[in-house]
Amino acid sequence: MTAALVLGLGIPFAPQADAASYLVQDAAEYATASANLQPGDEIVLASGTWNNARLLLKGNGTAAAPITLRAQAPGQVVLTGQSDLRLAGQYLHVADLVFRDGYSPSDAVVAFRESSKAVARNSRVTGLVIDDYSNPDPADQDQWVMLYGAFNRLDHSQLRGKTNAGPTVVVVRDATQGLDNQHRIDHNWFGPRPALGVNGGETLRVGTSDTSLSDSNSTVEANWFEGCDGETEIISNKSGGNTYRGNVFYRSAGSLTLRHGNGNRVLDNVFIGEGKAGTGGVRVINAQQQVSNNYFQALAGSSNRAGLAVMHGQANAALSGYSPVVDALIERNTFVDVAKVSFGVGYNAASGIVVPPSSSQFRGNLIVNRSGANPVTVDGSLAGVAFSGNVQSPLASTALPGGVDSMTVTLVQAPNGLWSPSPALAAVGAATNLAVMPRDATGVTWYPKQGEWTDAATVGHRLPANGADR
Image 1 (cartoon, rainbow, N blue to C red):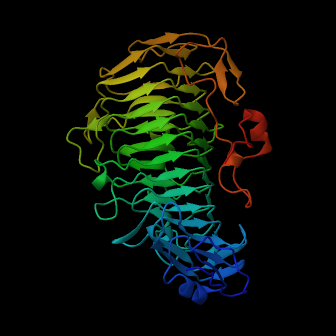
Image 2 (spheres, helix red, strand yellow):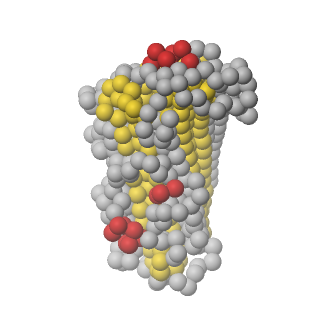
């Protein structure tokens, strides 16, 4: 194509060379424009309310010339009623759409597939807002975003208010629709999600137990999880090779749970609970998990929602069971005023959860409780965990086998808003210059974030609410 086909208002958009730009006013015009999209083509949804719009973006763009679907103006295209969006093909790019005042007529609001045999790859959804777009029947399960295929990205989006069953975002994995996914989920603001009351209220799930022994190799980084109270697992990791890096968990009642899968990394994250009931940190299960350089503060949860929960496992565990912790590396983390740092979580002879961690290391961690309380709890055996170079203030727990020094540590607030020891302790705790993702650098700038953050929180922690290049 060398000229733009313009539908609706008749106002042309300047296309790329050999590409077309379609400005469409309704679903019928969209269907016409999207019938045979070529690399570099774009469809522009005219500003206004799109009711009961079921959109399919299908085609094969290229890295240099993706096929684009976007709003005429960010925030000015609102999909309502029974609307949803599907993507299928290669190098598809969707930007700046809002879903609210309704709920999906299918199993997802946005799905990176048309069918099990037609999925999206190398595609991106950015600037997506899904605001309280929940099925009114809380037991009627759906997902808001379902990622299939490989090399897809969800970024700079805002999702808040899901009240019905089903994860907010899910990476779906199988041999047909993609196992080695290598997706990227970054710079999103996941706003409040109320407690569902049953299992199935995760904010993010990566995989399922049946394929958990294969690697997804996906990256979840630089996101804010705020008031994500849907269930015990804010993030439910159920695959291998994933990286969770540089995220902020703020007043979220739950934990980042390494439920299934091996060889995952939890790095450089910040967990701030402000004493809210049920707020937790990281739960460790399975093999070759790494938890390093994370910061945990004022987390009130216990057991599965402890600031750190290292579980016992089952011998010959089923895929849906609890595999023992093997070769875990937990190092250089800081725990400040957390209610619990727990080893042997889940230990239960009656259910066979009796296999202790093995070949694991807990080293260079800092545990400080300024009230003088001891947050450490131990059930079962710690013989398979090597403790070295750790500091606990004011006193090391007698439940630990050594490798933890008692020390009175004075904390000062660093420029990043986090508390660090003064004087500094060499090779103990998270880095004093740990980068904290600014809240305003996640999501979009053109739609409000209605969450749990207040000016008082800014004063209390001096966490960066502004700044950072998007």
